[in-house]
Each structure stands twice: as C-alpha cells, then as structure tokens.
Length: 290
Figure 1: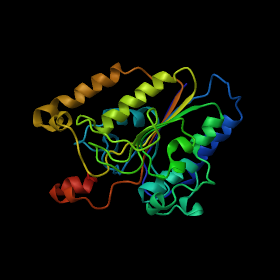
Figure 2: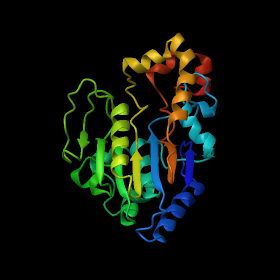
Figure 3: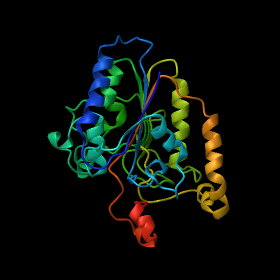
Figure 4: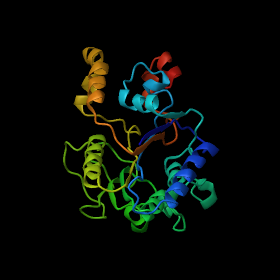
C-alpha cells in the first residue's frame, strides 16, 4: 500500500484533519499489535513555510519537485488548517489532536514555563502502544524540561533541538543515542537540514522490519535563514537552468516507500514579518515567497 497526503496549513485546525487523525488512531487500535499490514507513518512539519513558496502552489522561482510530487501523487487539503499561529501551540495541536487552548498551550511561552501538559497523550504515545517504533528528528518546541523531552512523550529516539535554533552550530541540541541531555555541536560542517535527513534515513533503515512512525519537524525555513554554499550556488543563473532537470532525474531514481503514509504540513504559514521582505520584488511579495 502506498498512501501520500499533503496538507497546506495556515491557522485553524479543521474538522477534516481531525477526522483523518481520529480514523488513523481508531483504525490502528482495532488492529492486532503484531499485524504486518500496519502502515509506516512519516510526518514532515515545515517551519514557517508560506502558502506560496512551493511549486505545487504555483511558485516558479523556488524549485520544490520532491514536495510537488507528494501533492501530485497524493491528496491536497487546500482548506486544511493547523491549530495555532505560533510554533509551540501548533505543535501541541498536532501531537495531541486537540485545540491547544483546551489545555492552556496558547503561546510559545508555555514551552519555557511548563511544556506540553503532562496529562496530554501524544500521537507518539498512541502509536507506540500499537507496536510502532517512534522517532522525532528536528525542532521539538514542546518543553525543554527533562520530563517533556521527546523520549518522555512517546518517542523512542530524538535527534534535534528543543526549540528554535541556528542551522549551523545549533543550540539546545540533543542526540538521545548519546544522551537525553543538551549537547554542544562543534562541527563547522553540521547543517541541520542535511543532518536531520541523514539521521532519518539511518533510523528508518534500522527499523525497516517493524512498523514505524517518524516525525520530522524541520527548523527550515524558520529564521535565521542560513544555507551552505552548495545550496546557495544552485541559485546562480546557470544553476537555475540545470536544477529542475537534475532534481527530476534524482526523484525518478528514488525507490518508492511501500506501505507508508506520508503527510506534509506547514507549522503555521509564513512568518508575518521578515527583514528580507523589503528586498523582494512586488511580484514575489504578492506570490507569498517570503
């Protein structure tokens, strides 16, 4: 079975998305824990990704062929919305399937003060109870307190940061294979987007013989906007002529993910104000490419 879903999100959690989440959890609950036909679940949660920043949304200036392929081969929720207009409450809504206002998680400050309420059950908790291997790779932002870190909220493994961070030398970084404590990243070549992708591929390979749930809340494209030279060079005039064809070829070589439910959300739409906005053309700003 191959199922791919894409969800372009802005601000309010809709009945449709709740229905999908409930159907998934209820369906799994009715299935014996050892059943071989349980789908793997891969959730991408893009940070501050604007509505108009994808090719599938009509943007011709930013090549996103792999994301576009999810929309082409799956279901697009064009009126789907997330739970909140802030990073942490949005994640709280996704992880619990509940409006964050129902349990006091309305603002980012809750992350620092108390974290995700202890009485809330996460998606990872429910899937782990159904025999799934669970992993979170990326930006957590649901509490930096030891009791609120991913490995205490249903995830077997965590590789990422507890809150927002630079792309290089990320702060508040945790690799649970080493320790659940915060670690310093001193490697100058460490770039969060690439490192998160590499760890995710490694984790999937290690868990390929059992059903798995991988939650990937990338910090991209939240500020500070940073990229290594190899990516910046793609947007030279010559590179832009080659890039769409090269990425298309790479996509065709990618093996299909069998028996996997794949979903792409944005955490809350684009950030309302960014310093870079003043340097964009009127056409770019109108298209939402911020």
